[in-house]
Image 1 (cartoon, helix red, strand yellow):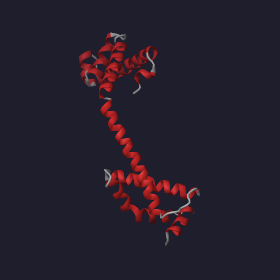
Image 2 (tube, helix red, strand yellow; image 1 turned 90 degrees about the horizontal axis):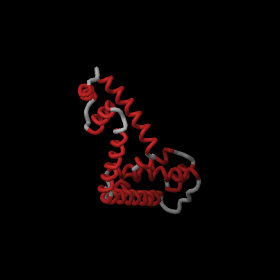
Image 3 (tube, helix red, strand yellow; image 1 turned 180 degrees about the vertical axis):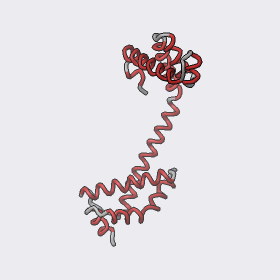
Image 4 (tube, helix red, strand yellow; image 1 turned 30 degrees about the horizontal axis):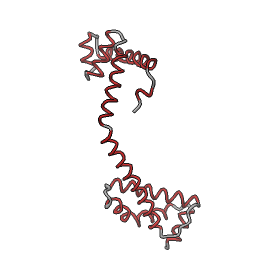
Length: 179
C-alpha cells in the first residue's frame, strides 16, 4: 500500500493501518532520539506521543499530508524531542541556580513550624518535635512521653498536628508554604 492509501485508512479511524505505520517507522524514530542524547525509554515515549499527535490530526480531518508519513512523524518526533531537551536543560539549570534558595526556603518553613509548635502545649510540642524534627518512631515517642502504646502516640500526634495546622492557617498564608 502507498502512504496515501494508508493515510486514508487512518483518517477513517482504521487502527490497523496506524499499527502498520507504527511498526514501519519504529526503529528510525527510536534512533532519532537515542542518537540525540535520549534513552530507549525516552525514545519510546516520544515516538508514542508523536504517533498519537499524528493519529489525532489525521482523524480530525485537519491534516493534509503533503509529504511521506515517515517525514511527518519524524518532524513531530524531532520537535517533541527538542522541547524535551529544552525542558531538561531548564530543569538542570534551575537545580544549579536554586540549591541555596531551596535550603533557605526549607529553613524558613521549619522556623515557622517551630514557632507555631511552641504555641502548643508541652505534650504536643514533644510529640511533634520528636516525630518531625528528630525522626522518632511512634514506639520511641510512646516510650519517651509515657504513653500506654503506639496507638495512643499516633492519636495524640494526629490531634496535635490538627491543632498545629489551625495555628499555621490563622497566622500564615498558603504562599508561605508553596514552593
